[in-house]
Length: 376
Image (cartoon, rainbow, N blue to C red; front, top):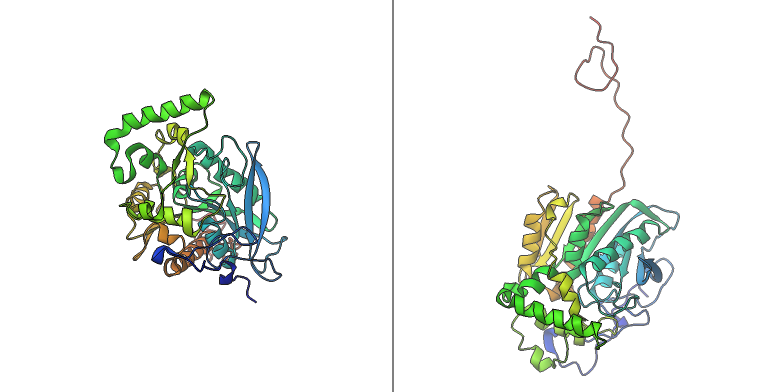
């Protein structure tokens, strides 16, 4: 029996959704992605549930350890931030597992106020919180047994990609940063997806202000995002991200930890924020990955272009992939996982002790910090 098993998520026999993906159910470990670990076994990649606090709020997370993990060792680690509306148990878990298979200790966590993490009101999604979640994940993994605290990277997916991109601007404990299908939440909430709603910005801001006022008066918090669509209605959504996103979160990879919604009043914070405002502060190695058919590609391209503070950067485009299909289609996830593993392996490599300097030749008086006899 292998460490991972496709049978962990059997497709429903009445799957009616064609190429929109297999219908999976959370397995015994709560994971809902392709080839997910279904049990922990010696000598295999394992996943363990952990809990810690960020600013006094409980965080629920999964740590993935490699097959040859040694708690007395000193491995590189990667923290993985999930998409907006998602959870640690979906695509974040998939790439955390793939990186553990490549030898990293990885951490996939639920954002505070979401999933199985604590915090009220539920489904709050504010940039300061999400960036704090990533910093808190770094706090935790730096102190996890078997991790070298100087070799920590970060991967963010979709909205988690935008928040990871922003966090790397200020948290230099992150030694290498990667994003997948980056979604700049502030830009989209402010201007609309693909910047199609800039003209209605003021009207939408007033609507959000009314939602917060109602909350303050004791009303039930209002949610935004995927609500009561039927599959037939969702198929009519014109943009790939939202159409395919509906099926990913509401049908094929559904989990109670990720209802695909967020607190409407959170928009007061996100509208005034942008993932790329200080992109030039990123001086770490940067890998930006996106599907070349994704209608969200413009956000990855803009973030990449604005990251002028690092010379070590790469924009890796996946031929044929849309935004959501980078989450689960093996044709796309396999090369993405390989590229991530190669990137983090090279950028988080352990430093080798410097070789002893060769003894200078007699009379070598070049501009070097060496002690030689240069007397005539």
